Structures are given as C-alpha cells and as structure tokens.
Length: 559
Image 1: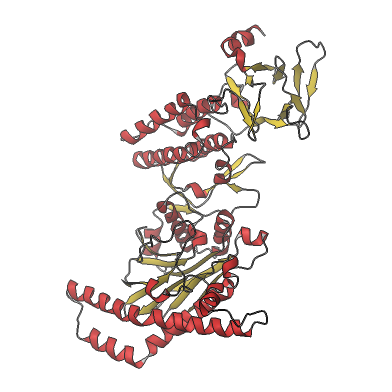
Image 2: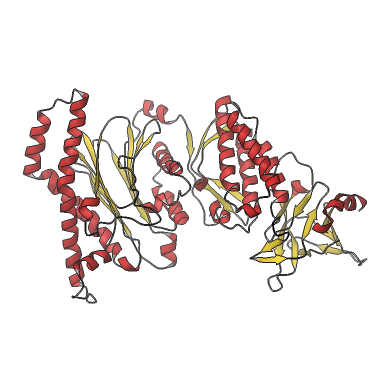
C-alpha cells in the first residue's frame, strides 16, 4: 500500500503491573511487498501460564503462513487465472471476486496457521526443563492459549482473519466505523475462542474488504482496549476518533493513548494501525471539520466509573455537577462538545478537577448547541442511573426524568448546562439518605445520629464523603467547583464525624451548652454535634437532626 504508514504499540495492563505478570499481548507486521500484520492476546490466567509466549508464536506464525500463501505458486496460478477472467465492471463480478477470494483464504490459511503454531508450541514445551513429557498435546496447547487477528493486502483488497476476541475496525474519512468481521456471540464475560482450541481452524472468521480512497485507517486491537469502553458498543467509536485526532495532528502518541486504556481496563492494550497520512491541503480541510483535542492523563486522575461503582459514595453527584460546569465553560468560550464517551471523563478527587479527554468540539450554532446539550443529558443519565435505586429518592430523580424527556422531544433544547446544574443540585440535597431504611449508611453500618447540614439556602444530607461547596451557602446561578468543606470520619472512632475546613477562611463554631466558641482554621475539623452552629464567611451553618426536618427553617431563621 503506497504512501501508507503504520503506528503500533503494546501497553502492559495496570493489573498485570501490580501482579508482576508479563505483557500477554504481541504484534508483528511487514510492509514489503504487501502489508501483513497480526495482533495476539494471550489468555493470561493459570490455565494458560505460557500465553505470553503463545501470543508471540501466533503473530510469527501468521506472518510466515500468509507470506507463504501469497508467494506460493499454486495460489498465484489459481487466483491470477480467476481474476483475469473477470473485469470487475459489473457489481455481481466484484462480489464474486470477493467471495471467491474469501473461500480460497479460509480453506487454506486457518489450517496452516494452527498447524505451524502447534509445531512451535510443542518444540518450546519440549525444551522446557519443568515440562512434563506425559502431558497430552491438548493440555500443552492450552498452556499457550491466545487469540489472533490478522490483516493482509492482496491485489486491491484487504483480507481480515480472526479467532478469539478483539476488534478489527475500518475508519472512513467521513467518520464512519466499519467492522468487517461481526462480533462472535460466544465472546462474553471474558470467554473467548482460542487458537489453542481442538477445532481452532473452524473458529476462524474471514472477511474481504476493497481498498478505496475513503479509508483513513485500519485498526487491529486486543480486547484490553475494547474493555476500556464497557458501557456501549458505540462508545468504542471514540477510540477511533482519538486515533483520527493523532493522525490529523501528526502526533506520535499512540503509547500515551494506550497507557490510558490499559489503566482503565487493567488489561494489556495493543493496537496495530495502518493509516493514510494527510498529504494535501484538501485532505486537511476534510479532516478539520471537527476539532479533536487529545489530552494525556496524569496519575492523579481516575476514571469516573471507579467512583460510580461505589453505591455508598456521593462522588457521583460531584462528578455530575462538574460535568455541567465543564460544558458551560465550553459554551461560554463559543464551543460545543460534540463527542465524548463516559470513558473519556476522568476525575481528580484530591483537587476536585475534571478532565475531558479525546473530546470533539465545534463552534456554537443552533444545531451544535442542541447536539451538545443532548450529549450532556445522555452522559448525566448514565452517571445518575449507575447508582443503586436505594440511593435515588424518586421525588428527586423524577425531576431529572422529566427534564431528560423534554430534551428528547424538543427541537432545540432550552436545558443549558446551567439548567442541568440546578437539577443536579436539587438531587444532591436529597440523595445521600436511605429513605427505605430511614438511616444514613456508612460501609454497611447505620449511623443513628441522622444529622444534616442546614444553610440559609437549603438542607444537605450528611454522608461519609459529602462535600460542601461555596454555592451551597451563598446564592449562585450555577454549581461551581469551589469546595469549602469535606465530611470526614474519625479514623479510630467511626461514630464521630466532622466537617473539615477546606477554605482559606477561619470558621467559628458554637456548641449548645457551651459559651466558649471553637475556632476552626484551614485543614482543621469541626466535630458534627447536633444543635451546633458553624459560621462560615459570617454565614450560619447549622447541624440539625433529621427528626426536626419540618422545623429546620424556623430554627435557622431564629438563629
């Protein structure tokens, strides 16, 4: 393939680093005279103890077997003779060419690849000092078990072959993603077919795709990347958009992109990308329709789904509020967020900062404004509904449901990020309390004190990781990320809870029955005592029992 380039990388998974396991993935390719590439993913568990070696053998075998086929006299004579009889001018002739080529390939290559792979495996096993000579061949193959994805060029076609999970994708210049080989329904919950299976040649799937000018790149990826996008098949498209961004910006940063996916999925991530570099001003104009901003992620940031998995956490509301704030900031600067997956949202819990990576931006127009706000609504839907129902009081969630339904029905959404932030803020006020049990929960234990933080604006339920923001005690039109306090639990006495001062302002706390005020400087903690009042910025914040909810506003006004 003239003027095409290759970028490739294999990144060890974060879980493998912790368990001190080697990278189980492997890849290999050659470009002359025809492109041939292969990617393999070793199964990695105890039953497949040598799968890292098996995956290396698999990609070597694939390159050797494909090269042997393409240069073999029998294949050349038959294929050339057949192709010369068809002009390809008629649609049925083009389809006949592709189907015949697929039959030729699938009848010869899978048996050849599996046979050569098994020979390599048996020779390696025999050479190992700790190998058992009495092991059956089937058990030996299992030790080296792995998947295999291949792509190679023949004539004006690209041929794809696959056994096991992983994904082959073709990205066209209009942003469309095509998967030439359909997903195998057997590949669910980390279950996959394998080149080590007894009937492995029958599990191979083959596809033929015509090489044309609309293709921007072809990607062969292991499931470590796919597992970084677990919510929806469509979310995985954003990985391809990220690759497109690297090509447009001419950034050699595939390694950093895969480092992010491997941290997210915990599994090894490997990608082999055959791409067409932008060469003309016209190509650049076509590709610059969207601005794709690729951002690396530091170790301080964690995927938001790591927080969403904890149903006893209030972080999901902070994340939802920060997301509204981020979208609002883009709109203020004249940009709309057009593309963003849940897996592209990372969060720094220490600094309370959100990072949107691989986002697609466009200038504000009525159409992009609606699309952006619809995207925000969809992301908020995913965030809020990942929390268990017991932590979703219906009277609050109904507010979100009603707004979400209106967005789906209206042509141009009037729900701006600021409007969404107010809805999230209302949910935040109610959602930390278990209305079914009538108590607060902390690590499965019930806190019988049932206290709330009550400001002049509203009442906020206390939870073990609750956060108080400036806009919750001072009137503000939108949620801001100005944090002033954290609810903390005493490390040795979990029954004692406190409010840690995160502001630069000294608080004054008055406790019922004591005439002596307590001064709480930055990073110090005010003990949460029922009936006490903490003055923040001169504004009283009361600690009240939930038993007195009905009289809370009257008590506060009297103070």
